[in-house]
Image (cartoon, rainbow, N blue to C red; front, side, top):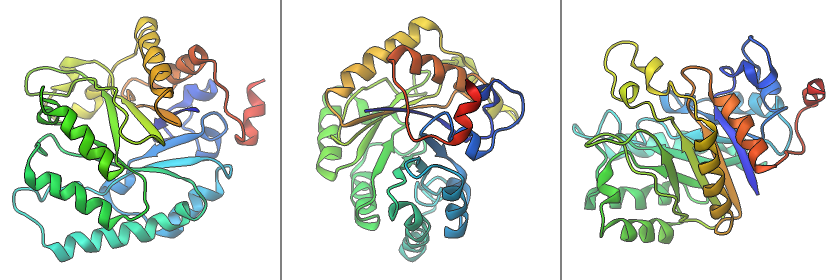
Length: 280
């Protein structure tokens, strides 16, 4: 099975050929999964998640980013108390319940910061994540190249397999000390997850107040999408589901690229919202 989605639902008006921001219901009429980043900044209440569920079809699924406390973004060097860390996980588990009870959680995405390097300490943390989110599908995106060093990366993949963690296949600009290589490796037979950030090297390294507007400013061309089709076809032989998430949002290119890849792969998505009829 192949699924395709985008990060957020409001930023993709071209998904329906318009210019206005989309509602979640409108989005769910075209694509079967969405990645939500709001839990990274603050863990939503279960009641908020329940509202999301009411806006989508029963088989629609969510990928939720782990909270920044859980990914150690702002606490890595200074440390965080074990009590505070466990409290964040408890709150997060409570937030997930409406989704896990109705099989609408595709995965919790741990997108680690670039300074989360390969180390004994961090291997131990990956083990704790699984213990603190029992039964929850977890996807791990590394942003430090140390995890992929030759002679080491196979052991890393084996470790992820043993824990049942989904290795996120990342496409992003890659240069010395910036970005990671494209590693289409499956570590959980249930799910292969690709996150496509674009290949804008200058924007990826941009500094200043508007760096977010430049970082994912990229439109994949036909040849690049054809490469992803080949990758997806290969991953399909190794995983029950291959999910592709486009994150090249800065210029509004993600939706167009997603629809183009959907056409290339020749896939269709059933059980979508009623507004799908408006496309015909």
